[in-house]
Length: 353
Image 1 (cartoon, rainbow, N blue to C red):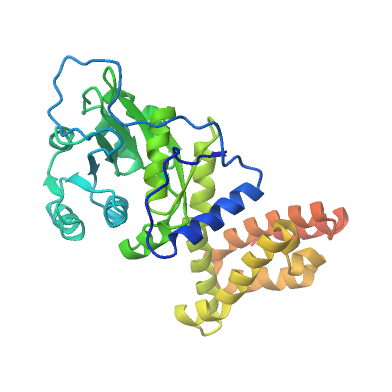
Image 2 (cartoon, one colour):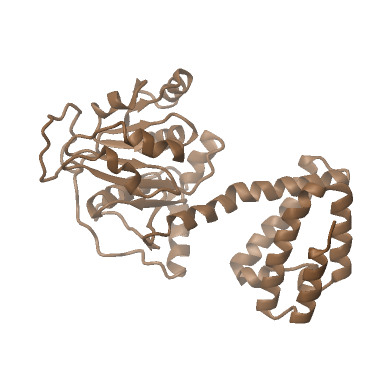
């Protein structure tokens, strides 16, 4: 993975705290050995392309070195949060397209001055940079219904798909790419705040990548470029970190109910332990952050856990077993668990319910 600094111009000032959080993320990326300063692609005004297209440009055109006229297709959680964050940071959103009238109206209220359309084809007539903030499964089918004009660029916000998903929308002199913020978009304001210091995976040729890096830095995020072919694995890790972690919290809360705790009580009791474990992993590395009965080879405790799960929370049992198997592998690699003890623990986990 290669991180991308923007073009040689300074990024626009971000909201309070954005610079610090972005610097912290950039420092962590640099410490991990990721290149934060690849060879610069040079300055670029989106739209300055050599190719000509048979159609005239009906959309607005930006002046050299200005922010391109930008539109967002999709007024859901991702599109709305991006629209709010970009507009507040000085990157105006000219238009939004959504077939859902309630979402269109909500977007217009959140991002003042935005033109709203029901169809993406109408938006394309208005803008230079088209951002598809739609579900992953809708990206390719939607792109197949659209055609860009020379000088336009289209990017999607999918974490799993490559830029090639947008190829059907291309024409001579157009560009496609991706702009995926690594943020949980559960709530608009919380997502806007989380964008400051977050990483944004970008794709595109050098000209478009420079523009997208500038867009990410405008909202206080850190743009990164992924190694070719790695995006699905990158996104799977993100899903484990977000949705997978929520599933783990839900399992913890289910066990907490057995102990008489409601959801709030479980989060209050186990939340600090989660945060401490994350802190240990950052400070010591993941293997050394592992604690508990697995590291000690304590089969008696493991058997007691499994019995309690079978009796009171059988739905949690598969998740507990899967995590325990991974813990055994970590403990053996770390040297805190002998191969014989690991075999003993595995046999307990493999026993019939």
